[in-house]
Length: 102
Image: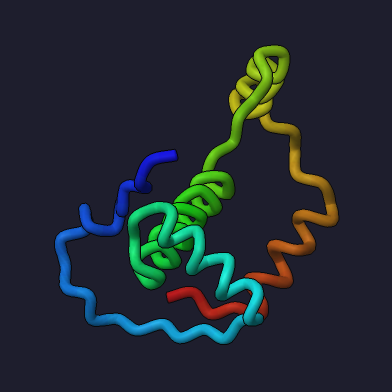
């Protein structure tokens, strides 16, 4: 297995932010071993893995994938939304009475 590409080097800004972690000894040893096998130091390996995971997590939360059968139902709902239920009207009224818009 080859070396892992450190994608954080593509970010053109200084390494000025600090993050400190406490972990179990076994986790630390495992990370150190994987880092050595990947050709990265502990910090680069850990930051790279965390950064990739963060990007994937954010993408998963920002992306909605519809099955083909659901496309038409979704677009029909956008084009012809149902009338708001009484509970929704009440929620908007409560919101308007309790929140100051800026």
